[in-house]
Amino acid sequence: MQATVGNLLTKLKGVTWTWSRASAEQAIASLGARMIQGVPGRSTYETPEGARLSLYSEGDLAEFVEITLEAFQDPHLLSVADFEQKADEFLQKFRAAVAIGTRILGPPAFNDGVGHDGFPEDQDAVWLALWTSGTSRLMIEQKHEDKELPMRLCIVVAPPA
Image (cartoon, rainbow, N blue to C red):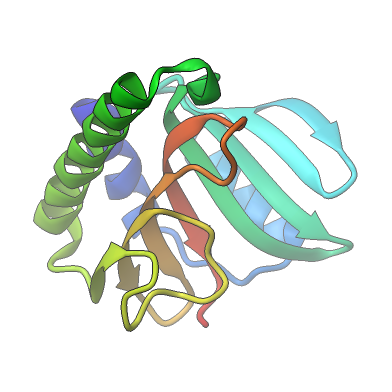
């Protein structure tokens, strides 16, 4: 996972986002990703590193890009103790990914859990680290949106808040 995170963050660091769907598709192509599925509002790609990348859009507007680095399916089937252990495992993976991000991008502008001051209101994550540029927000997120959905470690690129 460490090589994947480093490779993707290094590539993403050099991308200028303008948030039209066409320019986002060009940016994704520059990452070497290939489309594997498209439905209205979401195009799914696979990166050369093997990560799944999704472009979410509304008409001609790109809303955000999400790259799933790792996922654990069916956490709701775990015992309470096993769930807590899996949550701790994903927190450690999040921290390791943020350490890589810090080496590549510098210190994050925000790095904490949901509910803390400064947590981006438009994001749905448990833990989040945020780096900003003029044209985008680059985030590493540990997600678990619902008990029956996978636990995931993701890189999210979104327009400025």
